[in-house]
Length: 243
Length: 264
Image 1 (cartoon, one colour):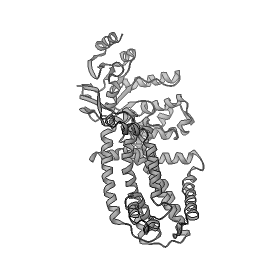
Image 2 (tube, one colour):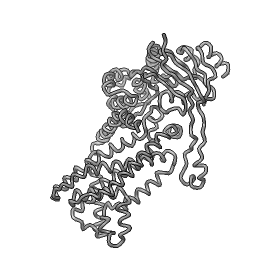
Image 3 (spheres, each protein chain N blue to C red):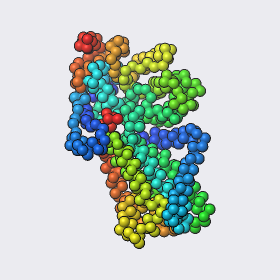
Image 4 (cartoon, rainbow over the protein chains, first blue to last red):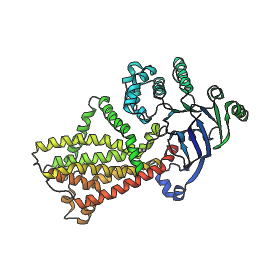
């Protein structure tokens, strides 16, 4: 029997449209400052993801994909509706969470890990594996600001990929570093996604990637679900719509 | 408010690790940088003591150098944290847009970092006091609660300033001028009561009791140097006010956190 890992119910997310303003402007035009407009990015979306399944989210730019993903990750809470993760740990796989450039790579592993909700002991356990995977060698004890951009993303990828959570959210499939590391990271990613216990949501514009990886596809259009179904049902229609 | 406790507990490890790491990186960054934690207030002390004593002829108080030093330590703590909080959320963009963390934790982090530096300065203060043979007194025991109170006052103002700092672009200019004004009115290199009590009694009371930083600073000096008890009533009132501001500030931050992400 399959159990759901993520239940999203009637989620609505609004942004208060408040622009940055200088104080002088605000004083000269107080009405504009106090008036708040609302923009609804996600308009009542409900779906379930079963444990171990891989869901792809597609939609054109501005359809609310990333907003929804961030809400599921808990970066902000929905204005209405609920998101239930049934107690699973979750992480949003993204590059360089909270890196502090003046600190060493090693310290940044701890900082990122703790931000993702791991304890110091859990990170300690995986520390060697992360360092090895990142291929940084001695650089791990030097400040992150001395890293090349490739090294930077290698470290970031290794942290999120090795500190695994039960639910992973992926905003565009990452392939980082040089050709060799790209291959390695893609393989790692694939093995993470293929793990039967892991539930994954992937946001991507690449139909090819989604076709290869996903079980189901959610098609968002202007903040609403346009279609939800198996990959073979939804993707062709989406491609047709977009072309 | 229950949420505050669970959130603080959850992110405490991250914040305290971050404080330690940041302090460590300052030390590692340059061999002499930790020396600057000590030199900075010491040099400022000399500058202000010179201005007050030689130019304005005001430094007749006993232990005048220590008097100025304590004032500067307290002020620098408040000044650093409040100034930093203006741009705090946008400076932490990398974190804010990728994971959830209650944003007031950033203020606690700054309080931790500046607080540690303040404690280092207070060790120097103790050495000064030994050198000047300031007599020991029981009133000195009030210093730790007074420092805690300074942290609460700082947190209260920082929450509000951090929130508006997200939306108002030029807040830093205003805060900088404002802090400068408060600096000169807080009696850091002069004694408010000595200078103003006889000539402008009303102004003296306003500066003394209307400004929590000046009040706490005065009481830290009084308890450490002059064996006097703190102004309990005034401190109690300010404690209540600042706790209220903190509660309001934290509530506002929770309410608007969603929109921070979109604006920065």
